[in-house]
Image (cartoon, rainbow, N blue to C red):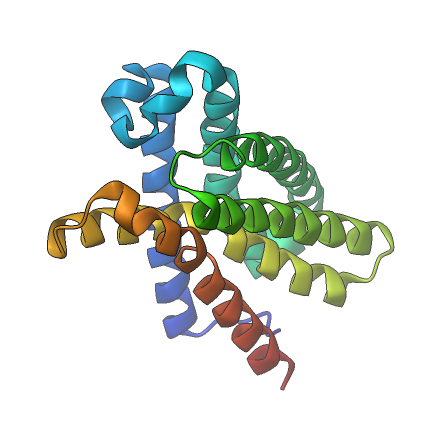
Length: 205
């Protein structure tokens, strides 16, 4: 992977970062301002019994979503390696916590077994790729570490793609939330992984 980004790479990174921080702020609003019923009404059914897990998933997830893009900036890694390492540790810990809470929510979704499967697989792959990124960094295999971090953050970005697909399908196609959620439980992360693998192979070429 090149240490010098092109203008196109910077533009793509900037767009991704703006979207990630925006969704992160939206999730923070759920945790601290108004509660789940007001900010995320589609998830309100979790409130009575699983508010802790929902708040943990969205709150910690907002943190890792927002700090993740900066881990890929070459100058940040080269000029501030200690900050990069500590931010990476926060990212890994946050993914483990948020991903574990997400698994609790996934197994209790009211959108049926397909959605349950989609979000459960997302949680398991998120935990696995993030753990692999950490283990490769500990082993000082930094090339493999970068590859696993790309995969991990592609899954983290499911929070963004889900919030693009869900309102688009409900408004643009006038579909009910329960009708589109099963498909979106896969669509929000499978294309992300495909793009991540394409980027990895492109940068290795």
